Length: 86
Image 1: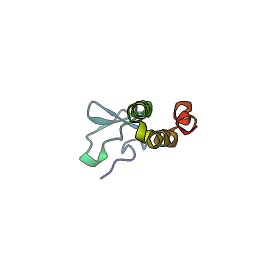
Image 2: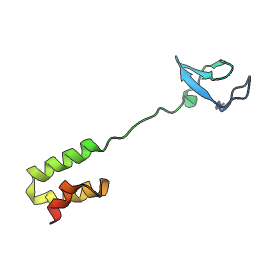
Image 3: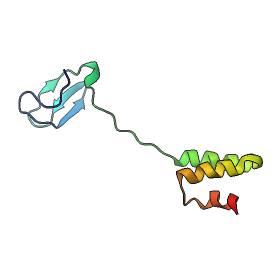
Image 4: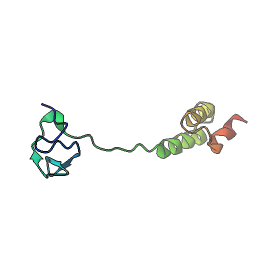
């Protein structure tokens, strides 16, 4: 059974706290099943990928246009990558 709302008060504002799913309003606690854990927030940083590709542009001049093209796919306004096409 997937838990979408609190069985006691009907609230849909549920958070994960100390291994339990906790209702924000009535503080009811539920033990989550394996498929009921709330999704974790993630962030994706592309800056390190761009820096690595810029470094490859400097180290591998034969393929620098390919690396610069990949950078421009990620960040079309990147001036450093644009210089390899001029």
